[in-house]
Length: 466
Image 1 (tube, rainbow, N blue to C red):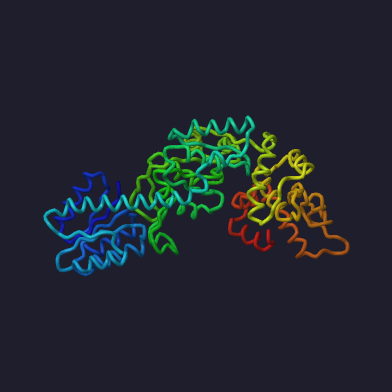
Image 2: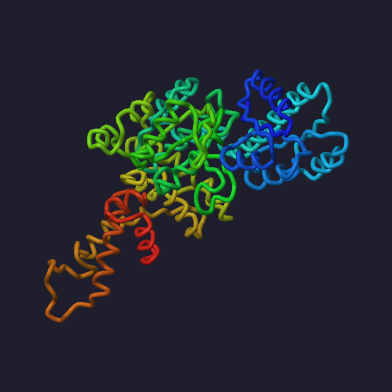
């Protein structure tokens, strides 16, 4: 069913189409002039616009052009009379209009069929886009590499929960592959042929996250030059994956809770609700029970999301999978680098299996990719990852108030003097590195730890090239 705007200066035609299309289950709004149609397009998102061509002041061709300017995802059907038939044909040939209907006694039935055809084309286009985007993840269970009992249990859980429509909350440390699990659930579910949309909630400031999730209408804010569908609407009939859900602000949590309750979204700056049918899968690397008790996460949203909790084990708890993962990444990166590396050195593999891998599978993948890039022979020699910035800082003698070799109590000055500019820069850089480490690289969380704005944090990160 679609969201349809009907525009005709004859009120009787608007009323007939309104009744007929609503009976077919569509949501319909009607206007009696081109100017009113343009205002509607500014304030709401429509799947189909049905407009008469010949109208006073602003005609249907101008409505068509405006629709493609501010709402390019909207299809336009033109209603034509005999004297404007050629204009309608030219509009269709030029790719502007999706269809045209000549005014006749059977107008209502023809419009109903045209709307049905147009919505089917829109749905097919979205499905094709989803197929292309998800082609690389079609065998998602195979992408979860491992044969350990922990991974076998995880795959069985995915198969079991995929057939349900319930929301899922995936727990796991950074780098364990939470998005792979979410994709596997989607591919194994009845929604597999529909879109899978992923967004990292920690990667956007609050206002930008709202417009990404809910969409916006033209003029909602500076730079909003056309209507844009939000990711929740893009994922309609499919699955949306909300990664790092714990990084979402309390204000955004309230808005997301409303979407889960009402099953509809309202674009930023819009007035109309857009119904959606989407499965929500969220993920976090934090203890949400603790966040709820501390007031950092809403309890009602937590229970909405955690209908089915799924835990992804850390790599250190399934070390028997490390050889399989190493060979998997070797086969992935060696051909891409144009190298013929047959196997991994036994000593290197033993070292890799004994390492703790605080960054989990992602860290192991980066290690193998780097080793492949540096290898000059036919046998891979992989070095263990270097210490993280916080550990390096401690080893280099970086105190909480200075850089290398400096350990200056607050309020004092060295007898030989201090290069104040460098001294302050060392402090800032050290604090930034520490915050990034503690937040596992999530910049919005790191900014919160330092109690500075996200914009200021980004400025300092760029300043020190971190």
